[in-house]
Image (cartoon, rainbow, N blue to C red):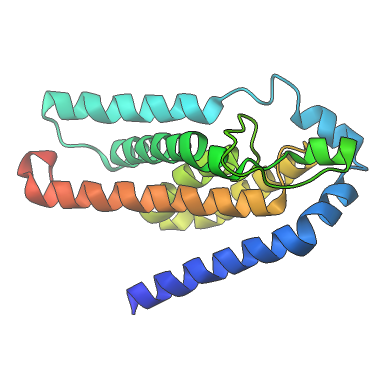
Length: 207
C-alpha cells in the first residue's frame, strides 16, 4: 500500500507540473508582474543571501561533532544534521544534474522578451527548473515534518510564503517550485531512510 501511495503521489505531482507548464505558469507570471514592489523586494541582495545553505552546514557540523565524541545525538541535533544532508544532496542534484538537463528560461527573461522554453542539455547556469530555493526549503521542512509533527502547519505556511516570494521576484514559475519541492522531499526521505538503516546496523549511532 505504501509503494502504491508513493507511486500515485509521484504520478500526481508529475501531472500537476505538466498542467502548470502548459496552462498556468505564463499567465500567472504575467499576473504577478504587476506587483513591481514585490519584484524589487525579493531580488534585493540582502533578502537573497544563502541563509538556508549556511544553516545546512551548521546542522551538519553539529551532527558530526556529536558523532565524533561518541555522544548520543539529541533529537534536534539529529534532525538538524539530516536536514543539512538532505539540503546539500538535493542542491547538488539540482544544480549539477537537473538544471543543466532542462535549461529552462527564468520568468524575468520571459516577461522582458516574451520568449519561453526549455533548452535541453545546454548546461544553463541560470535554469529555472527545478527551483533550487524550493529544494533547499522543502528538504529542511520535510525533515521537520517527520521529526516534529506538531509543527507541520508551520512547514506548510513557510513553503507557501516562499513560493509566493519566488514568483513575485520573477525567479521561478509555479511548476519550478512544485518540481523543486518534490526533489527536496525525495532528498529528505532518502537521508532519513539511510540514517535509520545505518543506525540499525551500527549500534554506536545510538537508539
